[in-house]
Length: 301
Image (cartoon, rainbow, N blue to C red; front, side, top):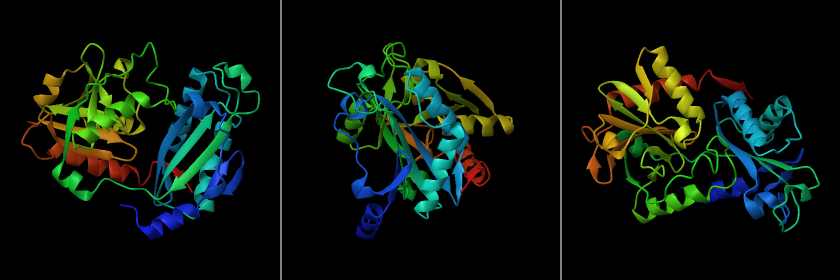
């Protein structure tokens, strides 16, 4: 939970907004901004650990890839964007933080036409204290559900685009909230497992690590990629394969990956116990190795 002192500190944060640092209370965008009106923009969620921004270059590469997919011209180079993130951390005197980097189409009119956004797009960066899952979730694991809301078709909205239009995920998140759990699995239109509302999903079966391929509607997660890398370096068998809910129910272990979550075990899905009903050895090993990786893999502040 965020304390009153932390709330006061948050209001004292400096926000990067189009090349300048402004007080949080003054960090505003136009009501005609297409990011607000239509979700027309892209973003990244990034973590910093002890003065090292984890895989910042990879996050910036994904941001620019997302922008290219929606034909959004970012007014900074990748090197300038990396510097802007580091500067935001330094201005706020933070070493451990969650960073939200957002690029919108900018202000236009009430029509859909992106050509009406004649000014440069809007870039803002927020760096703030990270609110982690409680320790008991890592010790005891999560209960999650399967959402009735299906994942958007990749042919409609490419999951490789980390866009500001997150309504699909939010609707599934509401289902999780209504069920009293933290997360919900989202299935594809034809019933395969895609991802959760804000995390990628993995299972372990007979010591084989498996996760859905991104092509079915999963984001190319930075933490997801890190976990696959750790597993391969440790000679673990890995597969990207289409999975059904039966595969999940029958798994020996299950866990979620994401920038905020890192690696969090899942012990129950739709009231069905996964494996022994406790976080598994492989999950715990990967979490320990991931946290070691965050000590060396990134850009120094």
